[in-house]
Image (cartoon, rainbow over all chains, first blue to last red; front, side):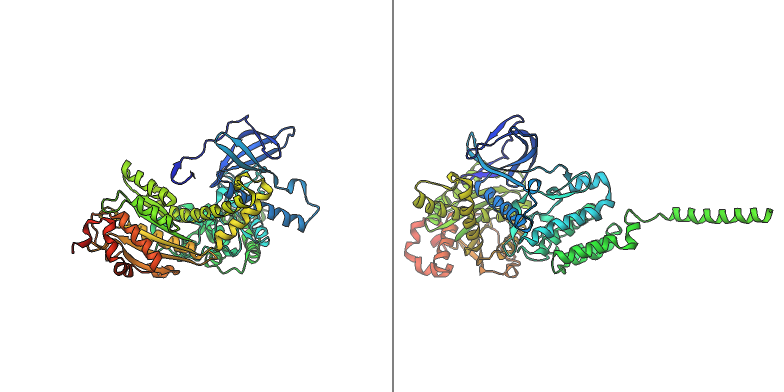
Length: 322
Length: 246
C-alpha cells in the first residue's frame, strides 16, 4: 500500500500485463514483462527479458522513489564491496544491472533490474523436500547473512518469503528493502521474527537481530503449530523470550538445533561468525548426521533385534544338525 | 522535528474544529498524523472524512485500522512522516540550487547521493512525538491495544540514532474545562509507559480540536498548566462551551 499525497488510501497498485515493454527514461533500455514474480513491501517484482537478449532478469518497480533509491544504494554498496573483495568475479554475480525510470500513466515510476533467481520460497521448498534439508539450507542462509554482516549491513526483515531456494538447495536473499546499516534502527520487520515483538531486545541493527529472526524462522519451519500457539497465547506486555525458550525445550522436532536456537534467542552469540560455526558443528556432529532425518523408530529396532535372534537360532539349529 | 499522532475512533463533537486546530499545528511546524481505530463495523463516512481532513490540514498521513494493525501502522506513519518532512526540506534546497528540480527529476546517479543525505537525516534528526488519545467511551475496549502500540512505538524510536522523545495525552479530561490530560511527559524510556490509562473515567464528549490546541501549547511551553495561567484571557477565542462551567 502506498499513499499518494497525504491522506488518500489506495489499494495495491495494479500490475502490468505480460508482453508490455518497459522502456527506461534515461538509458533507453527495453525490457519485456513476462509475469509478476512477487509483491514486496515497497514494490512489485516482474520477470522480464531484456530486448535482444535471451537471459531472464527480475525488474522491481518501486511505489516510492525515495524508498526504492534507498534500497538501490544498499545494493550498489554491496556490489562495490564485493567487487573490491574479489575483482575477478563479475558477470553473473553482478546483481544490479540497470537503474532507471519508466514513464507510467500517472507519472514516472522508478525501477531497477537485477539478476533473476529461479527458485521457490523457503517454506515451499521445505514442504516439498522435507525437514532433513533444514541443516544444509540453514547453513547456506547463515552464510548469506554472515556475508551481509561482513559488509556492514543487517538484513532486517528475515522471513521465509524473503528467502529463495533453488531446487538443489542454493539460497538467495530477496527484497533488500529492509536492509539497514549496522548501528542504525531496523527499517522494516515482521512481527513474529522481530526481537522487539518478543520483548527480547532492541530494534537497533546488530548481527544478533538477524540471528534472532533466523531462530524464529527455524522454529516456524520445524514446528509452526507451536509457534502460532505461543504467539497467540500471550498479551503483548507479557510476551517474552522465555516463552520461545520453553517451546524449544519441549519440542522434540527442534531438539537437534536446541542449543543453537537457545543461544540465538538469548542473544548470546558474539556475531554471525560464531553462530555459523556452532550451526556447522551442530549439523555435522557425528551423532546427528544419522539421526537428522528422524530417529529410528522403536518397532524397527525391535524388529532388527528379533531378526538377529532368529539368525542366531538358525545358525544354532544348522550347527546342531551337522 | 515535531509530530502529533492522534488516535481516535470517531467524530469530534465539542469546540474548535479539529481540522482548524491541525492547520494551526502545521503552521507551528508540527505535523499531525491520525490513526482511526475501528474493530467492528466502520468508522462512518463523517468520521473517516474528518480523520482524512485533520491529517491533510496537519501535513501528515491518516489511516483507518483495526487494533491488530495499530502498532505497525503508528510506527509506519511516524517513520514515513519523518522521511516526508526531511524530503520536503531537501527538495526545497534542491529547488534553490538546481531551479525547479525535485528528487524525482534527477537522473538516478545523482538521486543516489540525495537519498543518502535524506536517509542519514531521517536516522539522526531529533524527534518529538506527542500522542493524543481519544478516551471517549467508545474507545474503552481499545485502550489496552493503544497502550501496547505506544510501547511498541517507543521501542522503535529508541533504536534511532537521533534523540527521540514521546509524550502521551488523552482527552477529554475529568472536568469540563480540561480538554487534554497529560499521561506521560517527554520520555525516552519505554519502561515509564506502563499502565497509562488505568484510572481513566470514560466520557462521551470528544473535544478533538481543543485537545489538539492544548498539545500545541505543550510543544510551546512544555507544560499544560502553564498554558492555563498564560492563556486565561484568550480562552474565549476557542469558543468552548464547557470552559467556564465548573
